Structure formats: C-alpha cells, structure tokens
Image 1 (tube, one colour):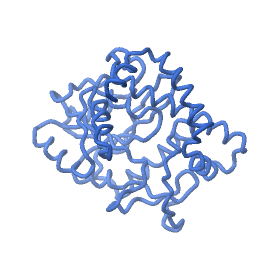
Image 2 (cartoon, rainbow, N blue to C red):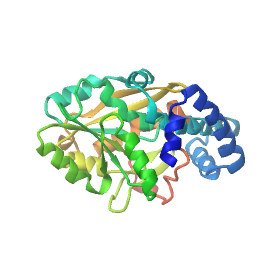
Image 3 (cartoon, rainbow, N blue to C red):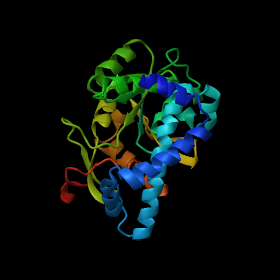
Length: 295
C-alpha cells in the first residue's frame, strides 16, 4: 500500500511535490519541531562566532532543504534518465572513469549533504557502462523496517547501482573484483563510527570528532583509489557533484591521510553552504577528548 502511494506521488511534477514540501516544512519545524534541539545545539557548537539570528536562518533553511530532499527522493520512483541528468550534474567524472579504465577500483567518499540519494545517478554521467565496464555500488545500512528497506533499495538501484550491506561490504567487493571488473563504490562517511570502528580523531566543525576510518581501511586492503564527491545545491531541485581526487592508491598513503583529507574537504563543503548538511543527526553523542585530535 505504501509503495503504491509513493508511486502515485512520484508521477506528480516536482513543482507540485514542492508544495507538499512547503507544508512538510511547517509541520516539521513549527509544529513537530523534529529534532530541533539537536539541530540548534549542533549549529551553536559548529558556528559559535555567528550571531543567533544567522544560526536561526541556517536552521530554517536546513528544514526547508530537508523537506525538499524528502519529496525529491520519492520522485526517484518516476523520473526519466534525461531529467535526472539535467538536475544532477557531475563534474570531473573523467577522474573516476580514468581510474576504472586502468582497472583501479574507486572508493567515493560522500556525505549527507545536498541530495545524497540522487548521487546514485552517477552512472548516467560516467562513460563506463554499469556491469559491462564497471560495477557501480554503494554501501548501506539495512533499515529495521523491512518494508521501508525494500523501498529504499528500489530507489537506490534505480540507475544500476548495487547496494552492499555494510557488514558484508568487504566480501561483496572482493566477489565483484573476482568477476574481472573494477568498481566505484559510494561510502557515506560522515556518520559517527559504528561498533568495531576505532575512528579517526580530528577537529571537525569546531568540535573534537571521531570520523569513520573503516572506509580507508577497506580501500587500503583492496588497493582502491579514493575520490571525494563535493556536492553543491545550485537551486531547488538542481545539484552538482565535483569529483576531487584524494589518492590514486590508498595503500600507498600514510595511515589516516585519506580520512583526514576527506574531513577537511567535507568541512569546506559544509561551511560553503551549511543548510544542506544533515544537522539533525547527533554525530557528537559520544564526546571525544581534544588531545586525541589532530590539529
């Protein structure tokens, strides 16, 4: 029933769906006040030098953006390749394509910024054909609600990507490599480290922070390259990802270099356009001692 309703909504033009987003913003921000204490605390810690009025503007814009990406994600159920390619631009895609042509698999670092679900449309911009020239993959954490999990998997495979559960990602990527094709795999690496990931400690957004280090560990073991997907919101319903090379061969870098470089790149992206990052996630739930962090 839920899937049928979403499919009906997805057939509506985005302009109509944004009317629903405007209503959702009012409900989320003014009525339900969804995680507003978390958002307000995160912004206060990240930007203590900004005025309270400036932080409130970022806060409101964040909730408007959050409502937008909700309807934009639904739209993925019924959007043409041509419209998606027009709305989701990729710059410097030749960096990843060049690595893949050389047989080098790629770890693509990206974050909960902009519309991260639309990033799976990278196959539309790449010169590499999915499952013919290269595998397109993304790491995900299965959701507790089985019905919602099925919906999200359907959305994320819309443009030919393989969704690999985080707990079996290493095994899955080894299996894909044995098939004889390189892969480009998206890793959402801005969450707090999960159990078993010691994390990489650094100052991030004015706070001592543990950044996921498992992505670098996996890429190092598999001899992958690493790129950063720098996402911007150009206007409502229009985004751009600029690919930036972090390392041609992660295994040849010092331990922590890739993760620290990613942290600095992501911090720059957030500071450029703070309202499009997912401030409602409590990434600093477990405090980190400042002396553990790199300067």
